[in-house]
Image 1 (cartoon, rainbow, N blue to C red):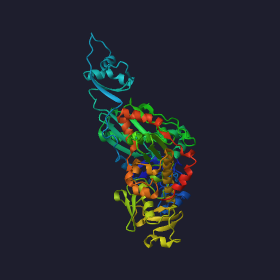
Image 2 (image 1 turned 120 degrees about the vertical axis):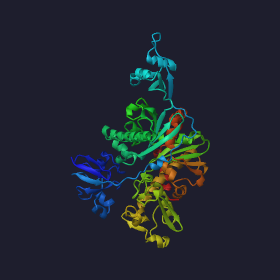
Image 3 (image 1 turned 180 degrees about the horizontal axis):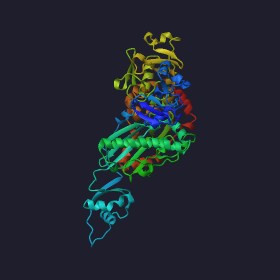
Image 4 (image 1 turned 30 degrees about the vertical axis):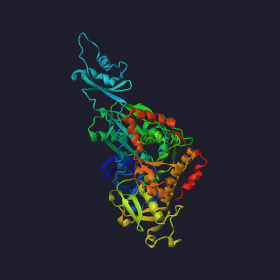
Length: 610
């Protein structure tokens, strides 16, 4: 078996000959971005072969790598199979998920109402005249003889009682004792809320005694190796039980790593964490639970289940109290998941009396409208452009990503995350770039770049050398190679604009369908809420310029942060709110856009830049 050493991470692994480098890196625990699931179409999984068989570059490598890069040993890891001992350089991945943790919140001023109760007791000692069994003595003191207890808790109970002078604490949920602990631990009551996103997984540790978030951690969803979008992952899972388990193991391993991080930050013992509440899109909830999502992909998009699922921790192997439980909030439809339930809960859209829309912008754009006493939702296949995928030099919102572009004093100004040299462009930068170039008169309403050869009078002289022609058409140089981290020009291409048009057109058209169904116009909206990490960083003015949002005054558009994650925290902290979340699917009208004959016409019109 050939040996592969990855540097500078200094990880070494033996693999079967013929294994590609992308899979080998994954087995070594290294994250390499591979949005296209190893098809060679995204060009993101770049590595450099330091030692080993370089071989002839593939067609995909010739497309995505320059002659100089190929000569220097750069390759696409999905295209290269290991034949001999090798040393592979993997570019250090900048964290793309850290911004999401800054949006933590959602439980301020919330009254704590946990579903787990802890009761500290001091029992009387047994005697010849009082030979009550230990468990019955505890239940009598609690005045709850109906409570059940598992063998795990009962096995060491007699010794625990006597070693601690008959002072113990019970953790109770429903009609079951889930933990018996020595002494008074009633002040140690914790739970974890998860937002299982297609791109990012975020966990929040809550002190359930006061509904306070005490730690937050996040990680890139490692299922990315099987594709950036849910359809790619559904297709992988549909190949068989082993492939489904691969996807489940990825997300559960990541969740456990987040749990370890949270506990390390706070010094909380894992046995004092009794509950997990999670949200995610319908596909992510299936994969988290290990349930076949195959029939979500084809029409009529039927999930295996939609109700909330509650399982014991032991069924999933999450590393909290072994007798704890996991609740995944309910889904609304095949492509409107519990993350949308979380958004509704966090923004209280189910209790609003005005006309309000919420848009969670991501690979799948989920939209909710509260109007005329109705609550409606739909999902649009926006595609992964807003996450940086399918964009020529797209990347997630990590250090060095272009996050802002503006047209000021006849110049294009660019800003990057952490003010580092540009290495690519993220979703907010993509929207800004298009808006800035529209303002500069360089992009037509159709989405085409103004061609300086055909219309030289429309292109200012100082921009003509920044509009260049490539294999895919015209592209605009945002940052020249001399100033970029990669040494290559960072560009906005004609293909990028097409991807952006498809994404923004799908979201806008979905909202117009909801408004049409409610019998109101966009001018009747009192507020539009932008949910999700992306929605928090996108500039409203740029979103309005490209026609992503309805043409409203900017003050009516409000970013609400990671509302899906906030909803999961609120449902964890409060039983009343959780019951409200559990009832939501019956109250929300789901609109399936694929059955609407009017959607395509609205979508085509929405492709235009306003």
